[in-house]
Picture 1 (cartoon, rainbow, N blue to C red):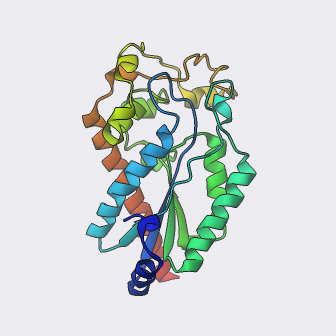
Picture 2 (cartoon, helix red, strand yellow):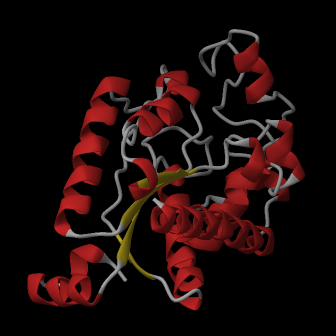
Picture 3 (cartoon, rainbow, N blue to C red):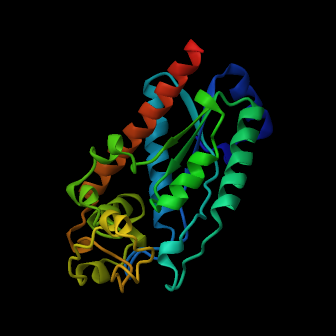
Length: 249
């Protein structure tokens, strides 16, 4: 199911049989507390698309996973080790080129799957598909439509490296979670969405001195598996709706 693992001959045959959808996982290199890896957002996106491919196949839709883009706009985490950020304009231009190239190769649709929720990062991604109509889409839980389908912690906004994301990484890559460190962390109730609305633009300004908020000690693999499936359903719907729209144009 991974585009990069196919030979040119195998891909050409797949596209000839068509139509084929490309799922492009996007994340970041960003601090996620003392217990989660810097690649947390990318790990989540990769886990989601792996399940989404199966969901789409059940709908009769052939999908391949494109190589992930593991960098993003991570300005909120500046000051912490591992906050590797790129400019929004660079991200937009780079993603635009990838999407246009995939479409030019013959893919029927490209869906960018994003789980790094910094507002400027999300805006940069959405700018990358402007003008492409139903040929490209973005699947991201930042929208009200999909955010309301997720956990209570997620909906509270206190969810950076908390129970929500820790559960997801436990489901996807459990060996990368420092369980002892997670269990030692007290719950924090700082809502990122409220802090951002109030004009705070860094974790430090929000008082997140350990680069997390929420309750990582409460995370479970079982909850993570359920969340992965809900996010995979988000991708499935975004893709199927876009393909349906394309047939009416």
